Length: 418
Image 1 (cartoon, rainbow, N blue to C red):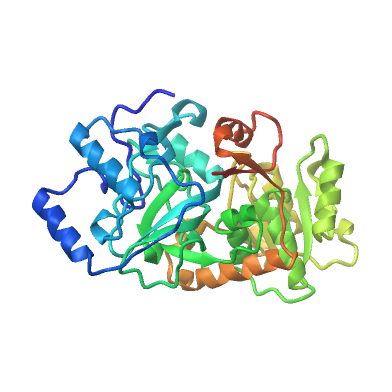
Image 2 (image 1 turned 120 degrees about the horizontal axis):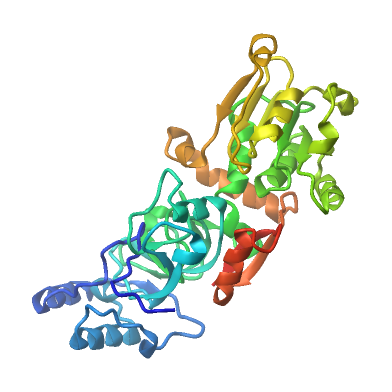
């Protein structure tokens, strides 16, 4: 990996911090004022060596010596608390992820009074992460030097002296709402952006709770008033969202009708979804018939449908819906448009809606987001919510990326372990 020719940044967290040292007078004033304050720093289990730092090309030798001494001595004053040297997955331009991503050293970041330094434990590779790197996602971090990732879990490493949140070194936290830049080993961010989560669940679940499970929960709650005994229909049922929909619906007594693609291993996939609580699972080819509802037996016609595929798979969801039913689209994996016969609107009075978690997180409805995250992790702890993932060490990030891009066939969700 070639070294970066410009200073990498920690975007979305404390952009711009950690590069320019203050003048002697500024340092003296900060150090004198900082002696009156106490700060808390996690005692690392293995520590870090200052000679491991990759010095940025713009810093003078004297400056590098100061940074090394500060990292090694772990000052207790606010002005001198810095994060350890970090490694991050960066990109300077949009394009194919396996072409534009690089792993680079990131210099220490100075903590502000209300900042929290977090050592990242794990972060997933989501489709939206890939889309951001490709430049096709509506919200993207500025370039160059963007850090990948938008979700993950970490452990509190150090706290600024003015932090009032109930956090202590060693606590597990997640960025809430999710933010750019989780594919790095250390992150510095204001205390308001961290949410403490329980640490008695598998790390991979804490790292992935904010996007897919929360999407499933909100879609079940926000569009149609569902009661125990009602039914929903969805395509893309083997996705993480699809698996979560099945289990969350089961918790609330709601039946699920699930559609999956025709491919090798589809019978095995059916069995796994049934174990999660799916009532019915069909491949698309099984639904190539006029009277689809004859397949439902005693199940009621679905009031709500979820589409993350588009094309024919979306049309199948629409066919199942009852009079006045609603289909919610939250993805388009086939990259084919959603089409519906005119008769569905006139005679069935169906509705078609869209859901984008990012937009929901920016609304007033997001106030209870952290409560929902705690609820979901509670279900994980109780064994009522689970989904397939594969944990891969950060040293094998390239392999995890290849799997996330589908270069090794169908693979579970890739979660990078730092």
